[in-house]
Image (cartoon, helix red, strand yellow):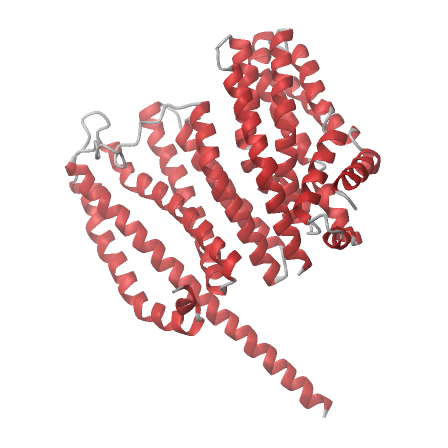
Length: 247
Length: 221
């Protein structure tokens, strides 16, 4: 199956067909989710209106983690099978995930001010998100520093896999170190503890963020394929001009 | 070349080349000396911050010479010889990281003990902190070596190594400093913290050389 979709031409056609739908769905979901979450959903009896920050903060946190998982998996696929598309996916996922992590940190600070009385609290989950953000930065810095295209992809994939292995350990160590964040209330073994009036807009926002990430990654990957094709054509043109000049 | 011969060679090189253990030790000492000047002379604050600052300074000290672990081998062709030597790049990476720990990072636990006393910790607490760093030092070196293998031969590799390795070293920072703090506060989590630091080091002992070898092999292709 990998090999079937690893063909850039086939991927490009598939992505081109999918993209209008993906972007359309993104707009639709945000058009429903944003007003529902930010205006029509009930205010919290404890946190009043500030609870609305959750509808951006929590999906951003999920997507930042999901994007890193995706980064690790596509790095693994690239490392084992050497499919270039997997590397393109990793390259596209990193900045998107970093932005989601950053968004999560900023909204966390904005939410922390009214809830905990401070812009930044060294709470376990916020701190893990900060470390995740640093992992993204390290990954992008390493890729940016290597000039050779093959080596860049290989080194990046190794670092992303190491990060994915270490991430649960970092998470555990930071939890061990301190915890004051409210415990997870949606993904639990005994079902969500969050009320349905909030769970619905939250789910739609999470879905909207997920589709947005998909659209962003697909668009970036297509751009990179076109970029690569352009480079190849330019090289061909140069060598042809050189050959003509030699005559 | 056998693994032991490689280890002995790397210990000699790490000891003699580039200032050996003096660089990280001096860096560590400078960090420990500067922190109180920034924090203020209040004895209680210093003791409370002590284990954290000392562990943090040790972590920074392991990043300082990390560029040397693989940088020169990539530059002068030793890497190719190691790859052809029959020892295998993973074992070679392991031996290099351990040689570096032994030859270059040995002052760090000792400085942690002295630093602990200087920051006003009880001798027992300072000893626990020192033991925490003793268990964490090989792990810190292995992670730094992994990052060093990824960044070997690049421009501004030092900065890159710090950015890559620091987040991966977070658990060791937490557990080593945690052991010192637990000893100071009298909470019964000294042993669990030490064991977690040892566990991370053991895991790094297996995984980091494989990662470093993969990074080096990518460079040779």
